[in-house]
Image (cartoon, rainbow, N blue to C red; front, side):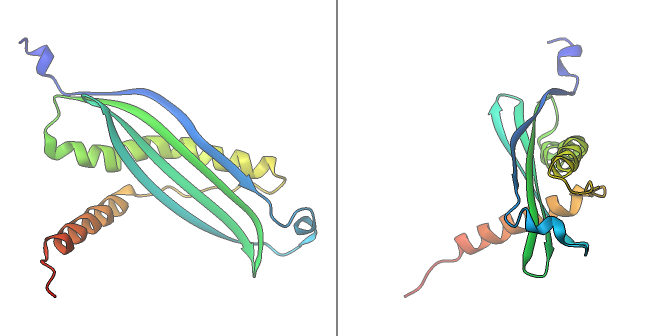
Length: 156
């Protein structure tokens, strides 16, 4: 093997919208409201190996605007990317897939949400930058807790 063949490789193969949805359950009456809604944000990430050294990473953002019990809109975008990772130490693959790749995808999903909400007739929603490290750490903790619970023998 040549030295070049063992060089670490990270490549973005494809970035795409996997799913996009918008609901306006209270339209058209909601457009008569003069008060600004509260914006709720939920972010989920996932990844899966799709081939040797090739992974799909997904960032799903759900944005809900509510005023009391009334929902103005629910906008959801699932942004995905296919990334190639070769000759990267196994210990570094998880953080790349859980932190690095979502950081690459987030500006795309942010634009998709803003565009979707604007096209629905509302002012654009500008999502603040997200630090994916705590999301990744929380996911690792959940996995560790699930494994610990699975390892506990059940007694009757």
